[in-house]
Image 1: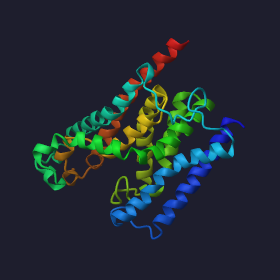
Image 2: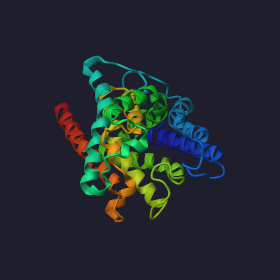
Image 3: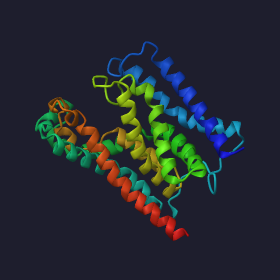
Image 4: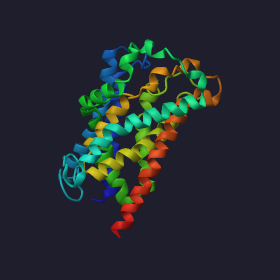
Length: 291
């Protein structure tokens, strides 16, 4: 069976099961903020379906579950050949990106700076400096949930895409697919809320952009480490928003302009893009050395 056909089976299974779950878990279309913590957790179980789609596809197509060599599942863990470095990088990059993104946000919209905003987050000022460490530890603890996504997107989709097209095209298309998978959640305000011009279509586009830029980093650490676990760690830590500056940014004080309303998103895009450029240069160097 061709890689293209396997990929289509995977995407069909993953999207069908995931979208069905998002509907079943939230039949009355409650907004993310409007539903309680219990239902939020129930809806969030949908994160597990990309890796379930991976397993089902491998069973249906009889592809198997190799842990080493070509066409392996990327489920294994190895620290040989300095691969341990990517596990450490996976924990630190989200912190670096978030601090850079928030610094850019404040540069674009200085009015958003609030010296006491951290009080609304129930964080003491002396503890604020330790919040990134807390976010990293929390992310690692709950990384099994992020594995649900990364075990599918990075463990199956991206390797298949990079077999049937060149790397830049695969990274872009893979990011768009991942972003569109979030559409049911974006439509209930999970990612950007519901109170913005062009809701929810603008939010879906923004999610595709974000997933494409973040997906480049996640794919890189997966490929370099030979495992989806660094990507799962990084994904989970990103979800924990590790940042000290976050405690001083009040989005309610954003200027009522296009840039003001999107300062946070623009800041994140620029921070991720900077890391992506570094990674693409590194990939290019590796490819040249391999020739």
